[in-house]
Amino acid sequence: MKKFSKNLAWILSDGTKGMENQSVALAKLLDCDFKIIKYNPPFLLKNFPLIGKFFPKSFIKINLNKNFLPNYVITTGKRMAGISIAIKSYLKDKIKTIHIQNPKVSRNNFDLLLIPEHDKIFGNNIIKTKGALSFFDSKKLLENKKISSRKTTVFLMVGGNNKRYNLNYIDYYDLSMSIVKATKLIKGKLIVLSSRRTTKRAINVMQSVLNKNLIDFKLYSSNDINPYPDILKCSDFIIVTSDSVNMISETATIPVPLFVYYFPKETGKILGFLDNLVNLGIIKKFDGRLFKYKKSLLDTNSQTILKINKFFGSKYFS
Image 1 (tube, rainbow, N blue to C red):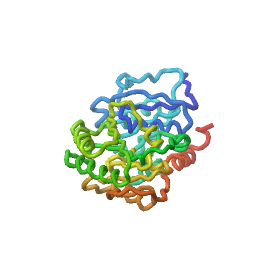
Image 2: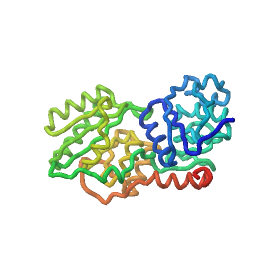
Image 3: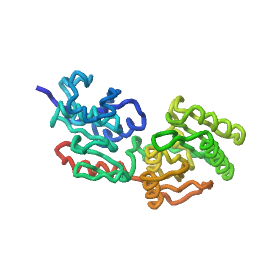
Image 4: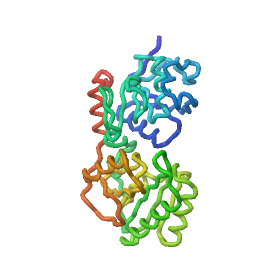
């Protein structure tokens, strides 16, 4: 007979860091031990998730016959929806599947969905979130915030192309020049962190602009050892490009002024998400100036776990 651990979650991840981080954040909120299982869905399962209902167990390629299986299977992003459906079809009510973001298929294929408010999707097994879940503890992060007589530090987090954007070198040139001018105005130093979506050409453009216009700066690429938490500890201002809901949501949880650089033609649901954060006093739209303001903090994590507890009931958390 199969036995199911009370406090175990499987995180199925294709290695996309932003997605995986949200799944890890959820497992921590559930106070679960968790195991990250790397899984690259086959083409059909990735692009046609409902095939998961009929996917042969032998094709799943995840051991479902262990003595201890999880209470929760956590997935994030449309690409991982199919494997969640496949595992649920085999294990049925023995596990709970929780999927983060819009899976683009019926909500009835999952036990619970966590979907951002700006997606405008509703249902009795859907919990709306104001932003992405944050995988780090902002309070602990800033407990040892580094304070010294150093220069004011500006931290720029840069994204890149996705289904909404096809950015070119001019976009990155304009971004770099704007940030250089703002950093010079406050006589600060600049730290830039690119993402996996930032192209090599974009990095080269930014490096060239910075070399010519700033003395005190450092540019980290996604290939470097991730200095993200350490940079946050010493940042006086944070600037994030508008393409990444994840990066904006994470940095919205800490009491450091947060400015969002809007890439051209920002429209639709993401613009609605950003406008909402502006109205709440959480972010400021970057207009070339950096300044202190009374920042409200985004509290997606604590609000979400309260709703999950209410949805599942205490018996799943005993």
